Amino acid sequence: MTDDESSTNDRTPDPVSVPRQVHCELKTLRQMGTHDLLSEEILEALDDYGFEATREWILGNPDRYVKAVYCGTEDRTIADDSS
Image (cartoon, rainbow, N blue to C red; front, side, top):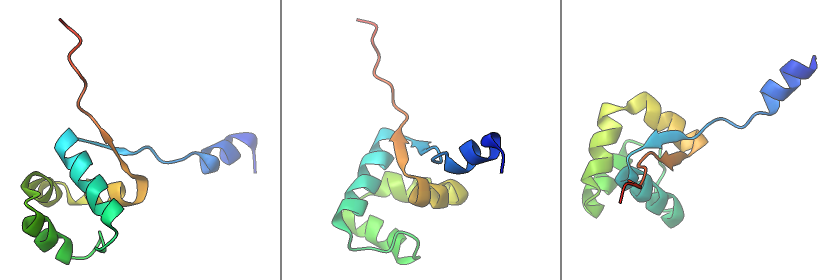
């Protein structure tokens, strides 16, 4: 294995950039630890908790959601510094 291959294999996957609300709601679900994030029941749980933005994001981005479960998420919202 070359140094290039080794550094590529050791690299941590980048988290998925998501809207702030989705990031916070997914973080809450992870912390609760009461749901299998890859089960179909997660959509019902999101509905039960009123996490509609995350539910809609998952339905519109299923591949990115799976990646987010494995790689984590990051808040893509950037504070506006123009004051």
